[in-house]
Image 1 (cartoon, helix red, strand yellow):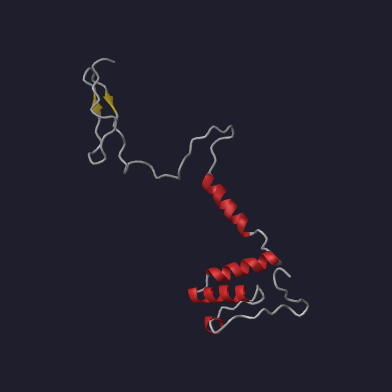
Image 2 (spheres, helix red, strand yellow):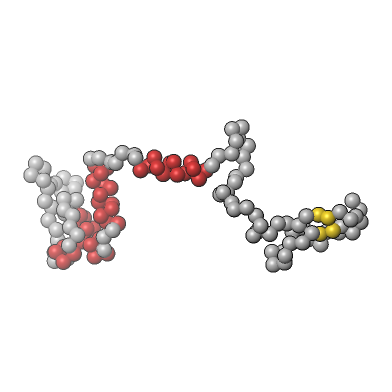
Length: 138
């Protein structure tokens, strides 16, 4: 193995791939294949130590996403909370301001998205007919 000269382990990508020769023998060492001559990739192949073989993680991800679409939707309080979160997330800054002010000032009994109505004054606490509003600490 003495006397072998390796100018580079990999050829630069800007130069065309050529066969390298050793200085002590007449055999040639094949050069790195160019990117244009390689076969099209079927995706990323990950190394594995699994006894059952490699897993196609892209297929597993597609299956999980497909299953997630069929999961049950929330109901009751969870559905109401999800709806209000979506409403707040998609609202304009003015509507968000109105929602925050109306909810806080009414002690959670009113929610308005109309800033023109809410900015005029303080929101009243209006509990449902079957409930009575009480002050904190009493």
